[in-house]
Length: 426
Length: 183
Image (tube, rainbow over all chains, first blue to last red; front, side):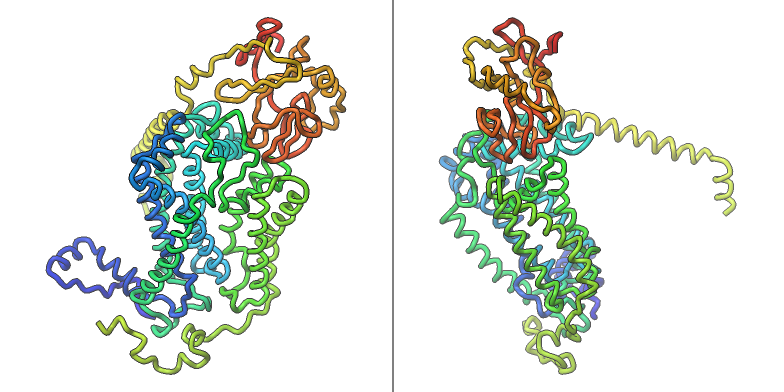
């Protein structure tokens, strides 16, 4: 294994670069992190979503900052200011549709990223801290998305804010105090909108901070990979540039085409028509549903026939994710070599999709019963199935090295030709 | 090593300085956080706008439910019919999740008037009046069912619709936000 993350191979060329590098070695840091950084040669396209997510975060911040220049966070003006953005502001419609659909695309990418992690066992040692930082980013994303959804002050905004702040009031002892501090009054109103706007602007920058920690924690052990085995020699790895930069770039272009399809062809499909009705505290929309990316959690919340119990189950469904590195007792990382876990993984994915579907249905009759069964299974997957599989499953034999997993057994003994180092050809 | 023995045997002036400094920093931090958190509490405007409101009951017909706001919170004022009052009174209290006799939820001598907060005690949606199995309220969000006394009968809501503080100023006028002597 080479000395990638301790010393840099960056050599400043100009006199200024030398002078600057000896004072702030940032060019060397970037070079060793995003140019020379060795990544496993078998990374597939599921490994490109970290880069996609970073671009989405930047895009949300850029469109959001410009939208904030035209938006008025005041209860009687907020709704009109959003329509003002749509009708009067140059390209306001584009910025708003990019920002609103961008939130959805952000969650599309993060769910692919999370499912990839759970399939290939990327959460296992030595990447637990990296993984937990990811769970924290996910929580911050959820808070940011919720706060942002309240800002247009339509019916769904208002009642979403009401439902979620009432969820927090279920917390014993301090719940009412937290609710009052969030509301800034006796109910959801103008002070609530003001502070939600402030917090919606703040949280993305906190996400940036945790993302920096996330990337730092990634660069200590390096990437996991589809084989789930460590890099053993230089031939198991390729440099980040050009291999991952090009792969990430291609993936990003495809993702942005998908994104543009929503923005330009069905910009309101993922939203709710009710949010084009100004907030009215006297009338609840007939059917309150959160945005699609919250639906599985909403189904869990409603499945429990007890207010505090529902809230605990909903938060528990995310907390349990953070415990996965210790709930999974198998030493093998990748599901490719775990025949039993692989099947249960896909059952769990289906259960998550079912929960999402149930979250969009009214809370009555058979839907409630189905939601209870799915909720029970969701928790059983992590708390019962995952620990047990590790004891009973007989994993398939692991390849001797990453090179072997790509080129077949014995490949690690054959010398690799110069074809594998295009970056060295100038 | 000798220093360590001395310091454990008897506190030195330096120990005192450490403790005093730490305590001062702690007090200073608390004093700094206090106004920051305090500024998030309801402001003076909001508190002032939360003064009691009066409601004239004469235009409210029997069987009608009127929505009013106090402190931004929705309140239902329901002029109950004889049948609704009887249905609310003839209930086995042991069967209730949040047992309360109907008489404890109305003002004495004014059983025809039910005044309750209009947000479901589950997650705050507005229940629909004159609907649900008990013809009280039905919450369309998560399916809570309330009877004609505003008591929870089915669904996820943990408690009955709460009664706001109010008092009868006269037989036809109530003041919401102020508890009367008979409350």
